[in-house]
Length: 412
Length: 70
Image (cartoon, rainbow over all chains, first blue to last red; front, side, top):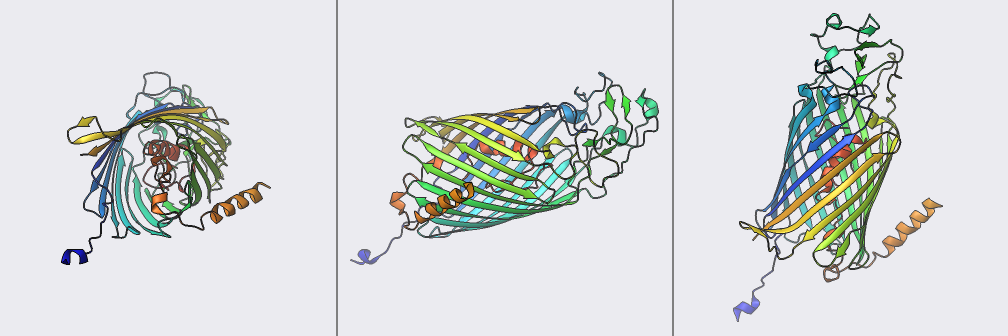
């Protein structure tokens, strides 16, 4: 009866089979405070971003996750880095035809996670790369997660660094090839921009974070999250103009020549504290809540509140109505269009750094098939997600629409 | 008043957690919509928000860096 003495401990695989997520989104926005044209001008932009995420179980304990995203966008405001294309009157509210009006962002990241035999410790590491015409980023990081109290409590500590660099695309009037004599202009004939190239084009970001998850009852669980970030280097966006109120304008057609590009400090420290609490109300309703407080040393404070109410309709369908509220105070260096002074050390007219409130309304739909009846090759379709969100700022004329779709496949 | 109520609510929530929930009692907590993280499609919203808003972090996702955003 030697067999009776043998102990066979069953260890559940962290991930049973390979999973593939195909996602895509279509985003459009419009507004009238473009930062490229110093806080006045069209913000019209559209973006399509297909993405693939693959989760691969390497063995019982280890999972490799790979994520690739391509984001192709057209931007009316970016096109006005050079508004003098000759196709139409130069105007901050009219898109130009230049190459800067479109770009493609590509991002690739990988994450490796190892779970201990008792599944109470998870170690992970990640690397990332992203590139677009004027920006490249390399990043890496890691985390350690400990579960205790019969897996009712989870503590995670993580750290990440990014080493990014700009390839600045300055507005056309700041380039050496530009001469005012080549144009008919009005206003200040002694146009002399207050401008010089940025010497340091690197941007480094260092973040540490922690989260504490706690099961509060059979139907309630919560997580507290904190992130502390330090950044240094070129934190300004090199193609965003500013106009000084104490310098007379020089106009070509309907377009003011910039007085400088935005100048922001070369360091920034950020702190974000958040909580997510989910309530399983009954077999039909789940309540998901989220709150975040954010503060940085540029003078910005913000609050974010989100509530989502998944509604299960039968076994296979779920609706996701949601609402998100966001509010922030402005950066110390922000000034509205043509109100900044040339005597200031730092300045920006980027309305993303202004004081504003924003509301976001969303509705999502999920079809879930636990039996994976629909197959493509060796992969079965587990779920389809579709979602639409509308975003608007109440204190600025800015709005955005985002539609997303996702297909989740698992290997047989 | 609101601060006091919030503190009381948080304290009462933690008192309920004195007894650990057993694995076989976690059927509701294991519902996919109860995950204490963003849903897959939320990554697109987080991306545009990281460009259009100054705040980032404390949501299990990006904290800053990796993009020419705020």
